[in-house]
Length: 385
Image 1 (cartoon, rainbow, N blue to C red):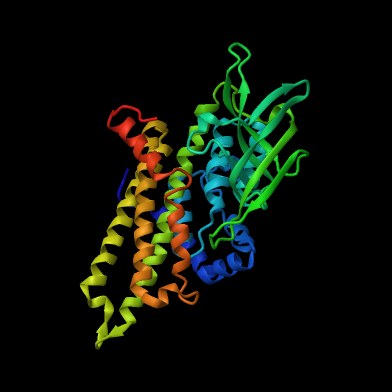
Image 2: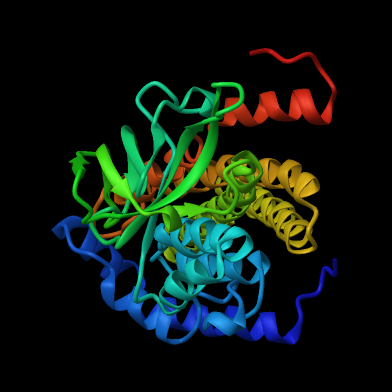
C-alpha cells in the first residue's frame, strides 16, 4: 500500500469532486426537505462510470476496487451530497454478486448496478435481530419450483428506488435441521413483498423502510452463491459496507469542517477573524487530524479487501468505521459551535449534518459492537456476549 495515490485515483478524486460541486449541498438539501430523490446526480454519476468503478469491466464496471469506490463516495460527501445507496447497491450487492453470483446473475444485475440504471437494496436487520445477525428468523423453504421466503426486516434503505433487494435469510439444513444463512435476490414488485416507510428525524433524501415478506415465491436462481457458504458470502459484503460507511462519514465530516473553516476565516469579532483564536483554531485542527487518521484506516481496509485479505480487511474496516464515525461527530458538532447561532439555521446548512453524523455511530454497526469485536478478535479478550 502506497501513501501516495496513483495518478488515476487523483484524477478520479478531482473529477468526482467537480461533479459533487456541480450539485452541492443546496441541491441535496432541497431534495431531502421536499421528499425528493437525488435522481439526477445518481444517473449522472452512473453515466460517468463512478457508481460501478469497483465492478468488473466485462459487466460495464470500471474494474477497480473498494479503494476507488470509497473515493467516489467520500468526495461526493465532501461536496455536500453523499449518496447513501452507494454503500448498498454497488458496494454490498454488487460485490456479493460479482464474487459469488452465477453467470446469469452477473449478466442480469451487474450492468445496471454499474451504470446506475438499477439500484438494489440490502436487507439484513430485523426487529429482533439487529447486531445479532445469528438471530435472523427470515426463512426460505424449498418448493418444487424454487423457494418461498417469509420474514420481516427493518431500517432498509432505498426500497422506494430499488428494483430488487438482496435479502439475508436462512435455509434449513436437511441433514441437521438447523437454519443457516443464505442470500436471495428478491424483486421489490414480487407478489408478497410489501414495504412501509419509517418516519425518521433525519434530513436525507434516502428513506428507511420496514420490509414484509409473506410467502414470496422465488425461482431457484434467486439464491446467490452456495447455500452452504452464506455466512462467508455475507461477510464478503459487510466488509465493503464498513469501508463505504467510513467514506460516507468522512465526506460529511470534511464538508462540515470546510464550512466551519470558511466561516471562522471571515467572521470578525474585536477586529480580527475568530479563527485566529486558539479556542476555535485548535478544535478545528483536531478535527482535521482525526478525519485524516480515519481516512488512512479506511484506505488500509480497502487495500486489504482489494488484495483478497478478508480477515485483515474485517479488522481494519471495523476500526475505520469506528474512527470515521467519531471524527465526523466531532467535526459536525464543532462546526455548529464555530458558527454559533448561525450554525443552527437552515441558511448555513450545518445543524442538519449533526443527525447524519450521529447516525454513523449506530449504523451499519454500532460503536459498541465494534469495540467488542476489537476486544475479542484483536486483543484476544473473552467474548462478552
